[in-house]
Image 1 (cartoon, rainbow, N blue to C red):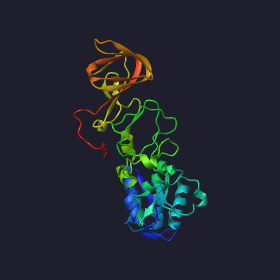
Image 2 (spheres, one colour):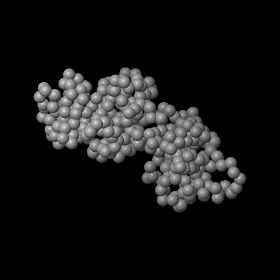
Image 3 (cartoon, rainbow, N blue to C red):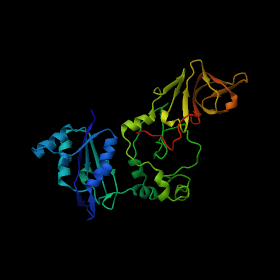
Image 4 (cartoon, rainbow, N blue to C red):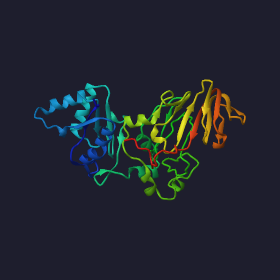
Length: 331
C-alpha cells in the first residue's frame, strides 16, 4: 500500500501578500503532486472529495490517518492554518512545510524548515535555479536537495545533470566520464571564478538546461546508493558498485581478495583503499601496493591478480556492449 499524503493549501487563484496573483492549482498540478507521486505517495487534496458528508469529519479523518501532510504557507489562509494546527495536535510527526515568496514569517513557525518555491506569471518559476546560482544562494540550492547518509564503503551513482554536493567529512574516490564539461552551481569560497567559468562559455541561461529539476523520490534515490555489502556479485571477492544503468558511462568494482582475486585483462585504474598486498602481472612480475596507492593497469598487462590483505576499487570504462545513452534512466 502506498503512503497517503494529504495536501493542505489554498485553491484556485489568490493574491499573495504583495497583491500578485498565484494560481495554486498550478502549484499543485506542476509542483506538489508530481513530486509526491514520484516519491511513491497516494496524493489527496480536499477539493478532490466527491462524497457527500460532513466536511469537518472528513478533514479530521485525513489529518489523523495521513502518513504525510504537506502544508503550503504562502498565504495566511485560515483553512491551512487550522488544518496544520489539527495535524500538530493529532500526530507528532509527518508534516512538510512549503511556501512561495512572502514578506514575513509567522512567529510560531519561524524556525521551522520550509521547502521554498518561486513564482513567475502566477505559477511555479522554472527560472528559480538560475536566480539561486547567479545570486549564490547556496542555502536555497542545498535546501532543494535530498540528504543521503553515507558511511565507509558506500557508493553513490550521480547521473548526468543531477545536482549534487559532497557533505562535510566525506572523503571519496570520484569516478566520472572522461569529460571536463562541468556546470558549477556553487563556487563561493572556492578558488574559481564561477560567474565567468561555471557555464562553459554558454551563459547560465543555456548551461542550466542540462540540470535535472525533476522530483526524485525515495525509490529512485535508493537505486543510486549501494551500501558496503550491497553490491552485485561479479566473481569471488568482487562486487559491482553501481547499478546496471551506469554501464554505458563507467564501471567500478570493489575487490576484497580472500587470498587472491583475478583482475581480468582490460584498461582500468586501481585505487587501493585499505590494507596492503601485491598486484601480480601474469609472468611479468608484481607490484607491491598499499592503502593510498593508485595504479593504472593497461590492457596489455593481460590477466592479473590482486593478492594479500588488501581492498581496492577498480575503475573501468563503459561496458563495450552497453547501449548508447545520454544519461542513465531510472524510471
